[in-house]
Length: 223
Image 1 (cartoon, rainbow, N blue to C red):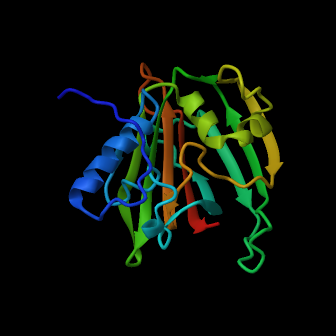
Image 2: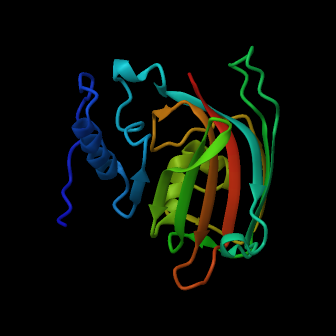
């Protein structure tokens, strides 16, 4: 099927119809990086619109409250432990929303991480006391480092002490940092509010399994 590109318009007055949802899927896919493949089920239009009034009750500008971060078990999804994270967060106080969480992060790269890597990010959503799998799926067949840099925005240079304006490579080594910078996915200024469990995996096309495999549990909350 021929792939067509479309330009993101302002979508303030679009009706709630299946045709509208399909249209927004095309817009969302066109807005992604050229190398990305996107699959979204019931949240497909969240980041395509940031100012539609009828969205504000359940989606829009947000900040993330982080609860847990943990690596996959060795062997899970082919994970070989090549990138290992140790991450802790301070407790979020809902009565002091302006106080950002402190993040304590230690990560070890046993191989250089660059744009040769693929990356896959899968978000499950929490509803009816259980996780609904694969609510949002991002597939990046290449340019994994650049995609991480774009989504981390200013956090990338803070975390890895790399110039975020140039090329993308993270050398072999162990990195330690504390941060109170609010975390937000830079390519997506609006998301549906709720609880998520994200799984991030990355690897090399010619290498079996994945070098990175880690989960994060978080809440997306309205600003």
